[in-house]
Each structure stands twice: as structure tokens, then as C-alpha cells.
Image 1 (tube, rainbow, N blue to C red):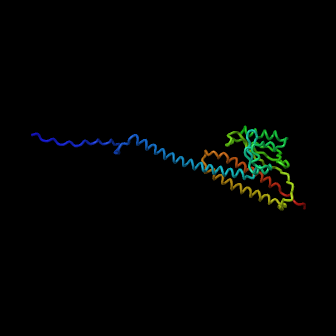
Image 2: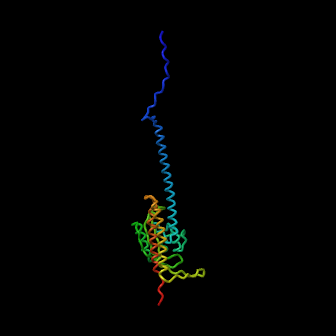
Image 3: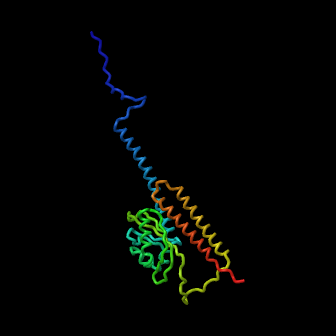
Length: 258
């Protein structure tokens, strides 16, 4: 009698191939992992972009504050000479509310004999993108003309994306304002040169402090930051303030007769 055959064991699935002792990953799983890594990378880049955007907005706010509150009159003109931006000091100098100056030609405040020099200076600044300086008689609204130095620099306006020029108006001599009954009496000013020298010293110290803050901002900004181009402009205005202070130091009272 034949011996019984041993029962067959259920077939077992062949083990999955392994790579270096680990289970091989399917193409779908590898693609999922790749997308997950890419997602993490994009999240990190997005966080860096948000931080840079917040810093950019902060620096823009700082620049606007410096521009609006500058003691120097600032005016931005388009290529046709129309006013695009103007700060408070310029409005006070021209005796017109700043918002009413927008889109008005600046030449309306120029004396006829200086129109050619003014136009040539603006044209040169826009074409060469360099600084152009001229002196002219500026006539404010309801006021006497005064001689001023116009520092003009060509630029590419970030808002209009067109050529423009930035101009500072530094008075060289302003006629005395007519006194009214509402005016307060003039305060006595020391008649020696120490007062003027001390004033210039205080102004320089204040400017040095602001310059140091700007240097901190500059060191914290990436080299390709778009607002870095405004820092030389601010620095030039500091120089203009210092020159005005030095001119003020020359306005010392004459020595008393012996």
C-alpha cells in the first residue's frame, strides 16, 4: 500500500525585494516624499519672504517719516516739471498746502529771469542721472521772492515707473516777514558767535545720530534690497542740512562799536 503523500503547505508570497537591508520604496512613495520635502522648502521660503516684506514696509515707513518731517524742502517732479510729491517744509516755504501742490508745475514759483536755468538744470539731471545745481529766485504764494539753491538729482520714480527728478530747495536769503499784532515779540539772540557755533554743533550731533541709525538699517538689509537706493539720497539731504547750518553760523551779529 502506497504511503500517504505529505500535505502541501500553503504557498507563501515571495519576500519583497530589499535594498541594502531595507524594504524597497515604490515610485509613488518616493514621489510623495519628494513633494513633502518640496512643501517644507516652500514654507520656509514663504516665511523668509514675509519677514523681508515686513522689514521692507517698516523701512518704507521710516523713509516716509524722514521725508515728510525733514527740515529741508523736498520736491519730486516728473519729466514735464509737474509736482509728484512734496513734503511739509516745501509747502511751508512756498506757503501752499502740500496736497494742493500736486500735479502743479513748479515753474509757477520761479521768476521769469530764472526759467531757462531751472529748466536746463532739471533736463540735465534727468538725462545724466547726476546732480545738477543752480541758484534762482523763488516766489512763494503771497510772499516776496527769495534766492534759493536748487539741488536736482535724476531718478526713476518707483510709483510712476518713469523718469523724474528729486529737488531740494535751500533758501539762501528770505525777506523778513511783516509783523502782525498776533505775532509774539522776538526773543533776544546772543550777539556773539558762540550761539551760532553751538547751534551748528547741536545740528551736526543730531544728524550723526540719525546717520548711525540709517547705517544699522543698511547693515541689516540684503544687498539687493530695492530701498537701498534711497539711502544715498537721504545722505545728500543731511549734507544739505549741514551746509545750511554752516551758512547760519555766518549770520553772527556784528561786533559792537568800541
